[in-house]
Image: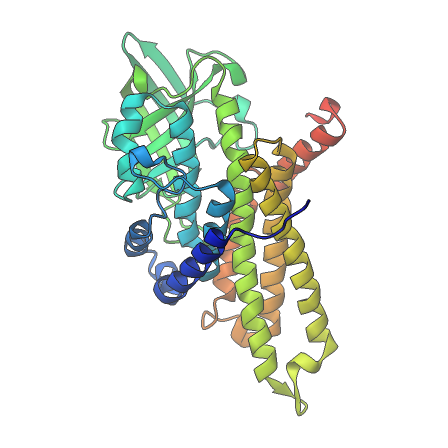
Length: 383
């Protein structure tokens, strides 16, 4: 039997999050962008609802939810404030990885603080010289007795400016390829850690930037992956985060469509409602169709993860298609609103800028297509 419905509890949560987001998050969406200010107050409000602990076990202060449920939350938050959904994305990803792989001392201290929203942890894999080619990482971790010494630069780290710690991937003792990569938990107050922020096209309030490590000393227990598990650990995380990213983007696109439908019903041209023009109504009908199909793909991927089934191919599909589709939908909505849609009086231009960023983060469309082709055709599709 195929059942496409959410549980009663999930529907109640969706309604609660939707009402909360419309009241508390949506009115401030443009403010953080215009002022380039980190939305701390919004993060605190979300934490009060338990949204910082969606993928953290109850013994650490979280309220461990299913992957599908986390997707519902991310979609609803993104409909109101796309950038606030990053808190759901990153806290769920990091919470998942720390729970599975971190030393008990790290989990006992950091996870309860994460669940309360008191500590923010970022994820750092990309480097200036290697984006998609993770095997070419240059950041180094040299073991010296009971410590590792980290050096290197990590780029395009979301939330890095406000982060209290960063999950960093670096190369151990100059071992080449994926086998030499390990994951390290790096508190940002350690000596030798510094940051810079970017002036990005979108998501201006999130503090995306670079992380610099200069002879940073961390204890052995801060290495959260052993032997050759680090790259696999990152990919396990991406198989989850890519579906969440898809739903975030689709949430922003759906909000844009809802606003556009309302506008076309109220706007008149040539003494008729704008919505009566098939040149306007047909794109809306098409985009709602695409939106529905993309959402089904994302939720199927999260369902596969909840049921411990293979979903790497589906996750890659979620990462390249829904963000691209969402950009196209938001662009169409902007054009439908004419010159006013091109101004910051409406949210379309900001949503467009914000969503474009997730056509890049967590793997480009080209990389996702390689993954999909490799799963369908075989390893000969690997570069």
